[in-house]
Amino acid sequence: MIALLALFAVWTGWRVFRVDSMVRASFALMLSFVSVGAIGVLLSAPYIGVATVFMMAVEMMVMAIFMVMFMMNPAGLNPMVMVHQHRLSIAAGVLAFVGLSAAILLSPLPSDPVPEGSDVVAQLGHELLGPSMLVFETAGVTLLATMVGAVILSSRQGRFGAADHGSRPPDLTAGGDPAGRQPGDGGGHGHHHHGGH
Image (tube, rainbow, N blue to C red; front, side):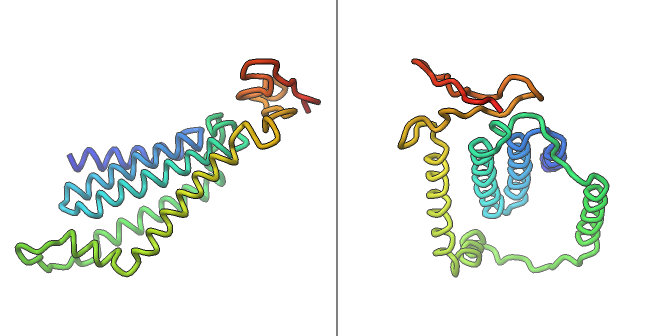
């Protein structure tokens, strides 16, 4: 099972750089981190595994939400190039892989068995979060406020009327039809875009 999860984590991590959408890349990266968290749970590190799943799932979902709301590329779903400077990216990836692999294989592993009956998860939680619980709580409230603000800012119906009145979405292709919802959509007598430049 661990081997299958490891292969899935590597494959979804590779897909991050192969898909043509920021949203799809976000979900691929989330699946990769979820697989890593599941490996942690299977290796008797439940706190680290579950924390990885929770933290990275929320982070990737927030990133996907912001992509859908604010990217000029409608919903972050239209085809786009995900990798730039290909040779430099490949070289950096290979060097990082070799360096991390060498660190894993050559570093001496400690041998310090945990006493029987020790509450490892509780001790690890106190060690990681004890001195910084206020920071984590503050960050959580800040993230919630940011998400609410993003929803409000991206709302179509603004204080002074429809936010897309007179606007025109970007073209799906050069000189082609505009992408996404057009200003006149939504029932009733819609407003037609002005200019169309």
